[in-house]
Image (cartoon, rainbow, N blue to C red):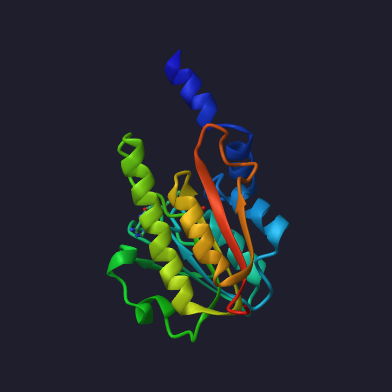
Length: 200
Ligand SMILES: C[S@@+](CC[C@H](N)C(=O)[O-])C[C@H]1O[C@@H](n2cnc3c(N)ncnc32)[C@H](O)[C@@H]1O
């Protein structure tokens, strides 16, 4: 009974929609929702997607930036299937140099992070690991974003969220904390969003 409920829960309307529309994961609807509210992408933009597996955000970004854009993903695990139009680096983010992440580009216009730690079930540990991943993503964004760039990062709710939000406020004119509709109600995840980098 429990198993049946679990399966039903995992295979919700967003899961089915993703499968029908050819997206690698239901997570795409979180990015779509954030993009609808904030307008992250423009044609020709350069996008970095940290924690990109299985690839639904890459699929969305490739379409959003069009043929003159560039989409680079990083994940410590290989994708189950390639995403046409995206370049993927298989590595742990903590081991990569900025130069390796740039892949020959001068900067990125959008830095996304949907990275999630392996959860232990110990809330404080999971929250701390999630915050560390966001700190790493934000440190990369601070070095690699072009002026007016955007930043999005998933974070588990904790006291660190407010500290990181304040750090974003130092760099972005428009900072928001969003809970996309596709994010499960029982999940403590939120998305920190910054727009207009380096214009303060
Ligand atoms: C929720 S999934 C991302 C889903 C993706 N946005 C999509 O739409 O398909 C989180 C990913 O973060 C990756 N990840 C977690 N820690 C990482 C790290 N230190 N370096 C690189 N990838 C990491 C995991 O391997 C996992 O694939």
